[in-house]
Amino acid sequence: MVFYSSRNKYPIILQLIAGCALVGGAGYGLAAELPNAAAVFAPGKVWQVHLTLSPEEYAAIEPRRVRGFPGFGPQPMPPEKPVAQNRDVRRNNFNTDLAWGTGSIVIGGHTFEKVGIRYKGNGTIFDTTRSIKKSIKIDLDRDGGKGQFGGSKTINLHCGVTDPSKLRESLGYQLYRAAGLPAPRTALAEVRLSVSGKLDKELLGLYTLCEDVNKPFLKGHFGDEKGLLMKPEGLRDFVYQGEDWDKYKTSYAPKREATAEESKQLIKFAKLVAQADDTTFRKEIGQYLDLDNYLRFLATTAFVANTDSFFGLGHNYYLYLHPKTKRLHFIPWDVDRAFANFGNATQTMDLSLKHPYGGAHRLTERLLAEPNTGEAYQKLLKELVSTTFARDQFFKELEVLEKVVKGPRERDAKAATSRRENEGGFGPPGGMFGTPPELDAFIKARTESVTAQLNGKTQGYIPQPNRFPGGFRPLGGRS
Image (cartoon, rainbow, N blue to C red; front, side):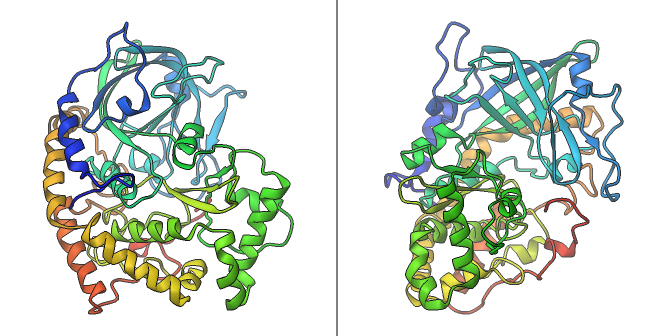
């Protein structure tokens, strides 16, 4: 499959091959200038990262389950010391507190002192219960500094606990970008951790370094960062809840306070989707939603079989309300569960392109029922399958990336084995749904299913309504 850039027609495989020469070295000396974003996310780049925390800070950032939550998965390890009451904490969707700590990071030879460090994730926290390798968020200016790396104050290190290939995020985001969507860039990182008296440059393993969705990201993709960025949670479809914006804020989760104009626009959009007659919906939807962006987001999310998404549990995506056009744009996030890595793999590899969700999904159904939009989606699918989603070149590109990741992945596995860790801490190896299919097996099965669907021979697999993939039902929390 040839991945074509959304801005030009040169196959990304050429960029990947060129970037492989960067693998293995820090790339920047202590005296060198800090790299820009293009250098940080250069194709094939593997960064060397060293985190250092004091024993007190290391104990403080351990995940802590809040009492009263139903028993779900293994309990987090008991903390050695209680967390100070004034410590900033992020509570995830399973009522587990993830506290901020303070430490230092050396990345590519550049040292940043007194940075904020915490673990990140929802299900990932349970999957890594028996491992010291967890997903990590670094805030370089949390204590008032001006530190930036690649033009961003935030470094996201995703552990890939449920992904044996360690390539799902890189390939997933690459597909979204090649399909013409705003999506984070990635690099790889080998991360080591030092804790005085406990760990001395312990290799945690191979991570995906993921570009943050922030103001520089918005400026680069939309030409304007002043719009409203949201990271919804549990927002699987748009329901009208009246004219009070306070009723929407929890699920929409705006990154700043919405203006009166912005909140009014979002409420009017929800009302249009939920209550407008077909004629009004068809006439006005383009005033609220960037239709091309949505169709590309739907097509790519369905193709990569990413059911842990907006169409599944209503999370792992951003919304951006553009300040000039007043239209909503979708941005993918957390795609480590893509490529049939969430639920029954055999079923998910046959996921429907038109109905990649269980039950009803009013926005998608209303859009595809409109003849012009439905025809535009079918045309887009055929175009993407012959270019961005084409089969043969995909294997060549996968082979290139496999060479990049081979050594770091082997060292990752060796480090976990030496610590006698079960990396998939909840349930079987690979996490709650077991080991996912190999990427080459996925692409063979997926392209066959897609071809059959486009030829009208099958509608593909339509998930069960009101269930997690695999028949698993949520027990609570924000999901």
